[in-house]
Image (cartoon, rainbow, N blue to C red):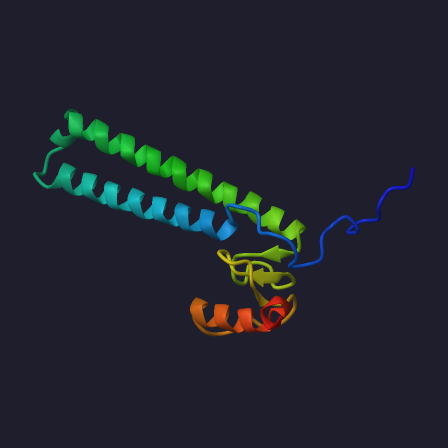
Amino acid sequence: MKTARRGEDRPRAGSGPLLRPTAWAIGVFSLCSIVVMVLIASIAAMSAFSGGTLTFFRTWGSDVFMSILILAAACSGGGLITVGIQSAREARRGYTTIVNAYPRLDWRDHRTGLTFRVAGEPTPSGSIAELRIRASSQEPDAEA
């Protein structure tokens, strides 16, 4: 039985549907979790030290704050690990949804799947909306 050579079973770079959720979307979720974690920790610290005592840590409110803080930390940590896993899956399929993550791969839009940058080319400038307009005008299906 003949085995396929390395890389032959991979789809053409930039072809096919995107893996869902994309690494970009998971990264945004992780970033939001980190922001929530910092905000909750700041509120808890200000509440705890505003009177000069640590009485806050002896109330039921501290349990709520700590529970939310731990949940946000777990979401952000788990999300960051998942970003790495999903980025590797996308790379095996020949593309990335995170700008400048893999310059040797196609950079595709996380929402539409349009190719913003072909592998090896410099990263285009402009907003995401401008890049979507440019990419949709260059797609072969858009001309037909």
